[in-house]
Length: 77
Image (cartoon, rainbow, N blue to C red; front, side, top):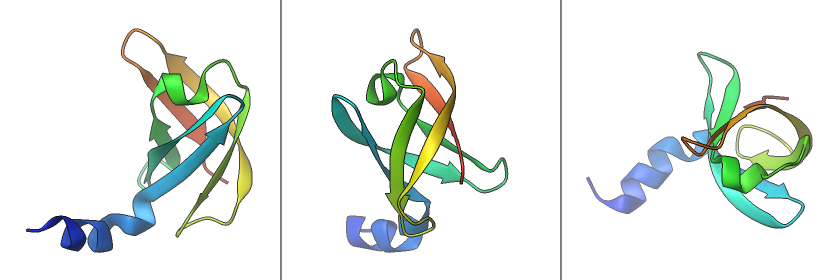
């Protein structure tokens, strides 16, 4: 499977994230209705801006961060 095929197949799950101080990406988990990203992407922000194929541009609340494992969970709009 080539990279273009993978991108096309999963592009609805890819979320762009913009926080004060930087940007990054995350993935939407429909089964759990949340967005997973890295803790360093959201830093110490309580909210970040998200956008993607599945969502219009919106603010998303940061529910949980784990700096040890560099994970963050965001509210899906």
